[in-house]
Length: 341
Image 1 (cartoon, rainbow, N blue to C red):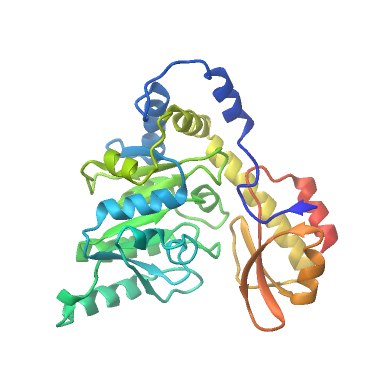
Image 2 (cartoon, rainbow, N blue to C red):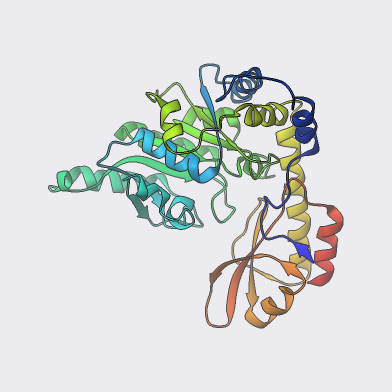
């Protein structure tokens, strides 16, 4: 059986496990106050070229999204996101449980445009009944999107300009950020994300860590008592050094970027295999997620030999499925999958 249904099937990169083992019996301060977390913070600040950034380590992606959004918004505010956005489709209402409505808008190939944001914000401001409505206080995007597409530097810059003009926050979900940064057609860097976004996070769970995400709060915003809010959301680890060690390792000698590039290389090899075998792509993705249209009978037959993710039903005869590579995907497994197609 081949497994391509997700990018967090394996445990953690061996270098992380080795450092966890080496430091296992050390006694350190809790809640991220240890030397490993501080070292990781400094390395992330350096990678982002943002020396004044505040860095916090949280337990998982859903907790991170819910915590950041709740911390930045007033009780009467909501967050703008495309209909396919992760917070709107695959987080079980986590944002709404904190009292903030997800204000869904149409996207294109999973992406939100600056024009869409401008129109939404302008319409709200000009609505005579806006005091009776949920106010948009934030814009949510992810890099890559749920469909493996990418924002360009110019698109990010344009969205940021609209947000700052209307005084709303721009928040970027980076659960798969490494794979977005290392995609062959990407022109966006960590430095540019830190320049154009108010808050974003660097995903570890899906990019080599056992668990954990690193939230980067840029100097454009300061969140009062963010540490306490993290704890309220159940996203604070008492043994915070477990996250610090992982991110310190990931951001040593470019490991985060190297293992992300490997996932992209494997995805492009798989993509080429699908193309050669004549498979239909639902959307063109240059990241580690590849979306294929399968005839239902073919899908059933293939699922007996390969694990992949159901994405959505296209019609009565065809289904869209996702194949995902990761930092740990072996080339021989990709070759074996191609032989099965």
